Image 1: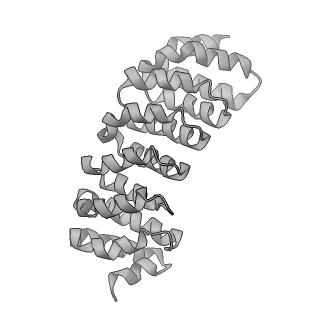
Image 2 (image 1 turned 90 degrees about the vertical axis):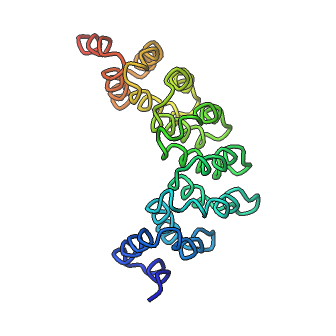
Image 3 (image 1 turned 180 degrees about the vertical axis):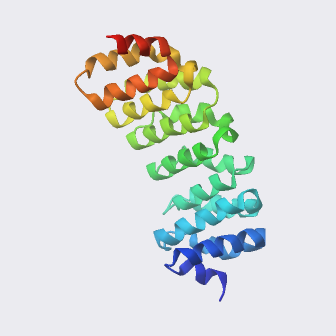
Length: 231
């Protein structure tokens, strides 16, 4: 049957078959996929459509204008469109994601950051904008910004100082993720040692926190990590 029926089925094997077929069709498959990047589509089908766009990658560039429109609309924005833009991963796809960082809906801001983070070093130029999002009023957006910085792993001269500030975030959800994020920068994040040691001292009875800090220090400041073990 038509490919879109494979997207509607609840049989994952058929969904994978459809994804392969979309890849073979290239841009011609876009009209079959776009209907499922919509709020009225089920979460399962939205997820499958996102994966199809990820599979197409840059071949899906012709869909960027429509995906951007759905993602940035003021009423009922479609978050899955933002994820699809991240999967396409071109410079043209970055612009609407940057615009999404300013959206009134926290969900759009969060999804935009996640999509940029998924692009890795290709999104390196967006580091300043993501750093600005570490100051967002919503802790879920701040958390996603921390994750994105660690996924992109670019510009440690900018990213590390921003992450050090995030260690004082009022939400444990955010600063605990920051401890893990610093680990990704290796010795480029050595400047975070004093703040990490302060947290280690404050939460010395909390094994989960002290473990994460010691694990991070092994990557960022091995000498200090060894000294902690000796103690």
